[in-house]
Image 1: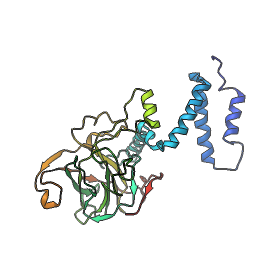
Image 2: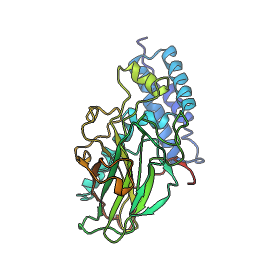
Image 3: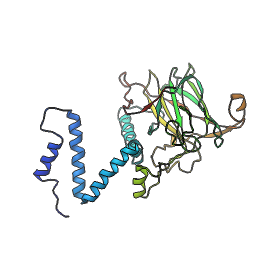
Length: 311
């Protein structure tokens, strides 16, 4: 249909009524955002001549997306989370904030409540024959290069099958397997003793992969390890490292790779003395630089729904 109706008085009045712009009641910001998003949608329907069948297919898709619990996964896969990082990077440049470890996406699989250890934590609770031992260690410093004491470094990653504890469909992992937190001492050092992760793919029958298939895109991520790093003296850092050598490092469906976040993997021996599953192990040194508070406040805290559990 060639007729365009978006700019008509009838449609513009409909948009205002749907967002209740004529009322002083309600949340003004919610009404502003609803009006803008609904306007953009209506205009896209006009511009792209979307059919009723396509619109209702979209409605049905969002029902499936909610049923599958994949809205946060889709947000990563469509670049929404990456876009938020791009905006925060730009805001930092505008505020003349430089030099910290680069941020990247949180992803949908964090679980709050991991036990906090002093300086060192072994987090491989469950045996995993397919995964070799790995130590991730480093020093947390401030923008001045000095160690940050009492920083909490949280870490979480997948097992050798690409599953995260608390979300593993096989039920094979105990709570907080491959998840942990350490508090740095005066030297700012942290260490996780764990197992080498692999990447994961979106659930093949899920809503996210359904849309990716329609666009001829894959839904896979390279092997990676997530981090939250917080302290009373600095802004929170949300980041992750990719495992060097993974073929998908520069083809991550979630667009989370940054060049500075691919540290070297070094072969080591002496793991038996450290309590690891084998004497030969891999080591990654990932040093973290935090940035100062802005006018005494942490402007990097993001409020979003997250899973929480008790260890």
